[in-house]
Structure formats: structure tokens, C-alpha cells
Length: 300
Image (cartoon, rainbow, N blue to C red):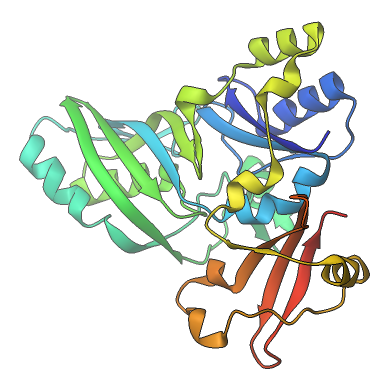
């Protein structure tokens, strides 16, 4: 039971509850998701099973695409519709051109402060626990990359935007910060993740579809192979000696030279290893000072 499910998370459920449901349906203990969605958000939630959980870090690292509905004129303490209104403003003077100009500041590499209602930890404690206790602490800003930010529609006071971004981006924070820059406040009214790495919402299955598939025994039809999310890694075939070395965790010498590996592309520092009969053996990581490839994840 090794692979990845592309699940369309329903509203009102936490990502953890989706994972718990998959555990219950499959009987597999090793289940994990690749990128939390807020309870009110919907859309693509890749769920890894069995040995698939070993590549979660590589899936989390991929770009995500969202469609967000932002309401201007109100701000909340959670930065979304589940929170308490903390501010109200007048967005009547804002038109399409003003909104588009304001969005320009959020394209490219930007600094972003995580919201208090988030899973980011402060001295080992999740911020949302502190927030629920009425405690607010200073949070460190960090850089995130907004690859694309497009204004889809403007129907005052609602703006719909499409965002392609790096991991670690809080769309709630973007909505809140946009309201701050416009001077009227804003919060995230609705959010759909339409893409996570290679997984698209057009191909995602609902929880009811998944339950039906498990009930009738065709759920494996929806299970993607583990290596499908690693297609941008170079692929190599190893002989029996190389397979045995991977099994033992020993480094391998490959024909790829150090000059073929770009320091700017961290994913080039890894490669997929296969046996001669096509079995996926795992991931190798380049060790530049030795010119060798160390087993990073072994699927044997």
C-alpha cells in the first residue's frame, strides 16, 4: 500500500482528519499529508501512504497554486472568516486599477509574517494555542516567493485572485497585508488549492468517492506511484552491486560530474535510482566534496 492519493479536501475538515479517515479506510498506519490546508479551505491535499510517506518532504517543497476570495473592508484576528472582526473600513474608493497596483507589491520575493492563528511554533508551542489563550507574541518575518499573482475578478467588496507560490506562504497573511496596504482592512473569505506540485484539482477525488472506492475494492486505481512526484530528478539505473550498496546505505560513484549539478537548483542534487528490471529503489543525494551519491531515501 505504497503511493499517493490526490484528495479534494472538503470544507470544515482539518487535514489531520482527512489523514485519519484514510488510515481507517486503508488499514495502513503510515499515512501523512503533504501540506496543511486550513479547515475552511478546500482543494488538493496529497496524502501519502506506506513508503510514500518517505517522500513527503520533496512534495511539500513543490510550488502550490490557489484561488482565493478576499473581502475588503473588514479584518479579523485569524485573517479569515472564522475569526473575530477586529477592524472595519470603507473600500468604496477602491477600483480595479487601485487594487491591481496594490497587488504588484506582493509579487516576487516578499517578506511575510505568519498569523498568530497558525501552526508555527514559539518556544515549542504552536502559535494558535497562544492565540486562543489571548496571548500575542512577536513573530519573525520570513521570505516567500510569489511566482504569479493574478487578479481574476473584482466585484466590490470581493476580489478573486489566483496565486502560485512557494512552500510556507500564508494566503491569509497575504489577504490581511493587502487590506493593510489599501487602508481598509481585508480577510480571506474563501480558499481553494487548485494545484500542489504535479497534482491538479481536476484529477482530485472527493472523500465520498474514496470511501466508495475502498468499499468496492478499486481504490488502488486512484493511487499514484511514489516516484511520480520526483520526475524533475535525473534518473539512473544501478546494477546489482549498486542496489546492494543502497540497501546498506553505502555511497555510490556515478558518471554524472559535479559540473552538471547547479548550486541554484537544489533538486538537481538528488536523483532517482532504479534497478535493471525497473523497480524504484530510492533517492540518492550528491555529496560534492567526495564526488559520490549517498542514499537519501531507500525504498528496498
